[in-house]
Length: 395
Image (cartoon, rainbow, N blue to C red):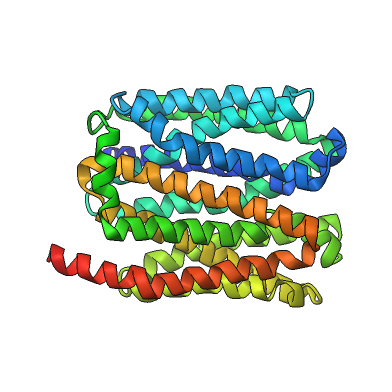
């Protein structure tokens, strides 16, 4: 195959990876700007944290219904439409006059997110050369990690110096450029056909998929109980300066690349062992949060391990969803997974807020760790046995 054609085969994945970057940057932008949004809108940090919870709950509720509605739309056209909605919603966020108009604009972003994460992983698998699906998923995960490394911290820096509104406007401009790139390089891809709610019961009778959805809910709740309030935790409990808080967030995001690399190197040689480590690891990191806050090196170390394992867990779950779902129902399975994971994000952010309200910021790590230990027990006692039986049946 000529070199030009080989490069052209990878360009759609490049476009998807950039799209993943802006979608993930936007989703978690309020986390890095929580204190600034709260101060500007004259609300509490816990109420500002509801921007994360409501966003996630909208994604959880709308992923499946919206995916069913648009399931017959040609995929390039669909991808461009949701990026356009994403751009318009970010302009609305930048111009929001108050808390509720900001919340409405974030709901628009969440609707775009609902469809994007239902189609993005299957698109990554379909557009890469044959036999490179794991690399396609890993590359998309790198886009998520870069969002944590570059997007979220830069958004925080922009917000600190010129205001959080400019951060959202910058996302709109970058997204418009990505829209143009995808319009130029992405091939036309027909959908897998009309999706129907009638297919859901069959998916839920698949014990591996059902177990995976439960595990994703528990893990996302674990992770976001702590992560949603990590910015005020680092500033108020660990006593770090704003610049050092930004550096910790950068390192946290960068560690996601380590998780992506680890997935590429170690996952296929021991999938169950890999999933056990990346499920238990973040729970232990959350358990150590308060103790680590006493020493800057310790807090950096905890965040590196936590960030790497959280990213690796997410990629492993996406792989298993695609692996065990019927081919004709991959998109609907990913819709359910995306919805369930975002339900966990919302529950985690809400639970973190309850802990902060009724105890203190110091308690978010312990609350998250407890749920993480429950997730690990579920993985070992329920998910792994069902996974072994399913694999034996498929052989």
